Amino acid sequence: HGVFPQNVKAPYPYSDDGLPPMTADSDYPDCWVSIAFMAAATTRLRFTTAVYVLPLRNPFEVARATGTLSLLSNERFVLGIGTGWMKDEFDIYGVDFHTRGKRMDEMVEVLRKLWGGGMVEHHGQFFDFEQLQIAPAPRCQVPVYTGGGSAIALRRAAYTADGWIGAGNTAEEVPGILAELARMRAEAGRSDLPFETIIGLTTPHDRDTLQRLGEQGMSAGVNAPFEFSLGRRSTLEQKKRAMEDFAEKMIKC
Image 1 (cartoon, rainbow, N blue to C red):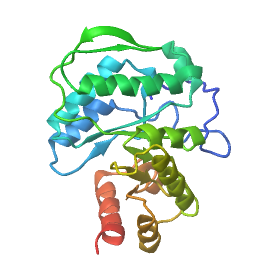
Image 2: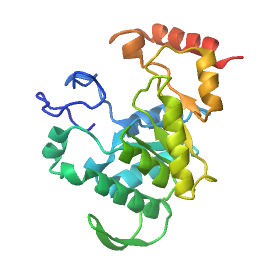
Image 3: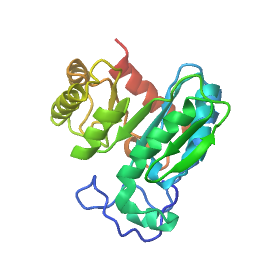
Image 4: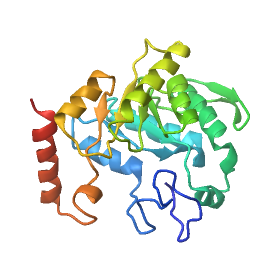
């Protein structure tokens, strides 16, 4: 998100009561600065936004920031995007909430042109520009993963994206989602292309469940965010121990 209004009228689509898990005073540090900071201190970790509300933003600014991140991190950055749910935020930005899906689809097209390097032009419904370029361009296209659990969101992932990021699902829901993504990717003629599924389970983790889902096509999972597993305030040592515990129980053989 860009901003968080004091009074949010829009219902959050991923909770029973319509209330979001975050509040107005929840920390939202800038994602590009944060990822650059972490990428500079690591060599193997990959980073993604989960998810960045793309239709709010300017595609030229996003292309420059993400292209630079890809270069400086040695292609360890993935752009995770979503259409957004908070109409209040779109109203503040002065962006039409009701056309956000079409706007995001066109923005991805624009981003991929700009990431390709050299002079490019675009003439679409929301963006129209003559020859221009952003330099330096990334060495290769930045992978784009899309989020959202609706039918249209799954279709967007299958038809246009390089991966899908779930918003939280039970273990029982996952096989159906994976099957639907596989069906639509085959329908789109994209079954042979790389595709990652990052799925956060809302049910307790166990290795047997993760292994079973992995065999059915789930390529990545999500450890519970610290706010949920440790509470809103926790020390660095507590965070490190939680990560080590997860690695010991769920990752190591």
